[in-house]
Length: 271
Image (tube, rainbow, N blue to C red; front, top):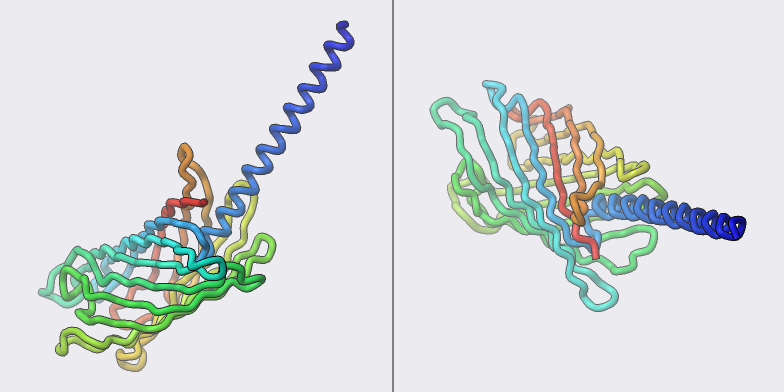
């Protein structure tokens, strides 16, 4: 009986170890899949990124500017074949004094919304295209353009093993608003390179390159270079994605920042 009892307990113990390994393996795999979805701008997943960009060396006084981007992403299934991914950016801005006597300002900037139409099953290349809109919601003229603007945006990416690589591009043109303000003709390109590692950790580089085509030659481009690290983790049942990145501007307009520190906390709501 002792021998039989010992064998039964040994068997149950082995089953317990196997189950524990399976649970841990599934948990690790889930973290990796969540990380890849969080790195995909048009993933079919609701999320709420809170992205804070602190810009250093702004203006002649080398001041600090801060922009908190509240960026809800909400996908809508259009039948079985297509998804509509809505991405909105509401910037909350602290703008230091650039010109003497103008003072600093704090408030809401212009809200930007992009609608990506994306195939539900895109194969090896995931892509989306659609309109982008900018609304004159700034609480102070210093914080926005005072223009209604629209344009076209596109994104494409591929997921190969631990890598998530792609790019997002758009251009905005103003079509209405205050005639005394400068027209909007603004280009944006963001490439993103992510390498996913164990336990939800990943390396990332996702700088945002912009060009203001209305500016004088030599003051059009902002070209940052850099990257950082992120991690998927849980607080209770809520999955989160946290990351930190730093970028040095190798090209910038007059009064533009020398470098940027980006901190992001993203709430994930997988199906």
